[in-house]
Length: 269
Image 1 (cartoon, helix red, strand yellow):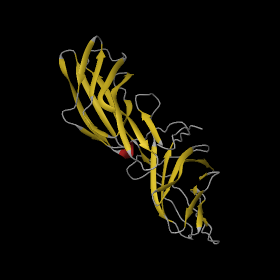
Image 2 (cartoon, helix red, strand yellow; image 1 turned 180 degrees about the horizontal axis):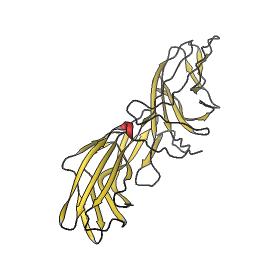
Image 3 (tube, rainbow, N blue to C red; image 1 turned 30 degrees about the horizontal axis):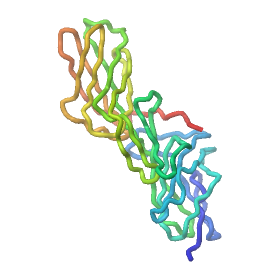
Image 4 (tube, one colour; image 1 turned 120 degrees about the vertical axis):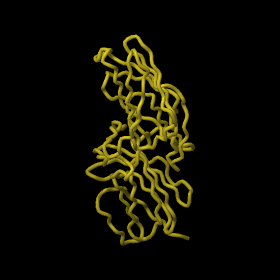
């Protein structure tokens, strides 16, 4: 019979090797992956949901780990066998009310306040020495940035309401294996001021959005010529110029991920 080992903690502190052949330590990196926009700072009290599979069999699902003084810790341990392949996954921010039989987080980007979710995964082969889990978090969502520029014939200080449609707005992510299902094709309604960028988060997908808006009594509708592949962790900027005597035009520019900082959701405790 194989010996059992305990995966104690996920931490940014130095890894401590084990000497009694019973405990396996681990640590977690709070750095973002190279694809993401900027390092993420976790704050005391932030919680992540950790799941683990041993030989592809779940051993824990959505276990809460809390950040304090630079480390993530949990009151519960993860019991695994020596020599086993342990697949770890984690997401932020933590949601306690998940169905353990079908553990999925649902992100509906039509709801104001949904600005970011993070996801990480790693695979370890457990041994009697200390282990390190390098969980590098990536964004789950992409971002669209819209800027409306009315011609000089229009007032420049009015309020502009617009609708973004033709895209799927909801993503369900399985916290055990990371599988994603897109749904909820609907409209996202926002308001802004001329010349002021408005930020909208969406699930990663290939789509051709329709942007409809009204300003100073006139209605417009524009769309890109071809589908755009929206990648998680990246931002895409649409500048829309329009006027009473001309057809609206739309231009697309991809903003480099290094210059785009997603605002994390407030912690859910």
